[in-house]
Length: 222
Image 1 (cartoon, rainbow, N blue to C red):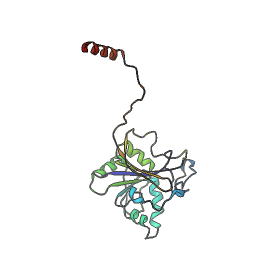
Image 2: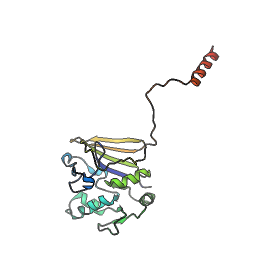
Image 3: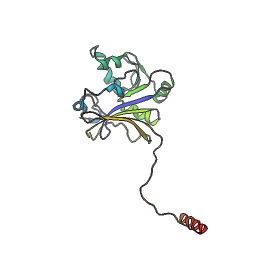
Image 4: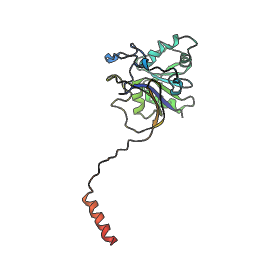
């Protein structure tokens, strides 16, 4: 079975909306588009987190697809990111689009969760989401995401689309690797680790039943 890997740029408060530019996604009056610009670090390999889609099939939400489709096909042939994204198979989640112009692109149909589950069951390259906040919400709730590559930037945006909204399915995660860029970006990879396991540091008083049990044991030990 293929893995589904989700990669996202997020602020410290979890916002992932419009990281690349002012006009990328202004919905909801979002005014901070392009917030990752001042934290770029040429020494960082974006391929390691799958942001260039290298050696993977890509799964995109409609908004992210339209942003990518309007940009990457028109970049110089020598651009390595454009080369990998243009060549990759792309699966698009949309209820409004009927045709796709970007090469190697396919619509997933009305039931995105079912379609992605079917893709995972097929042989082939691992699947990769990039951005696509709304799509991630649906796939995370259905427990279809096998790995999260999250780059956390040292700023607070306060509002905007978040990686995990209130509809997210509770669950534990295990950190498998992390590093920090020269500009303070924390680049972490997580995998699901089962259910949330609540506990308490508060010392509670034993119940009357427990006290009676202890007293009985003390009498029997005499």
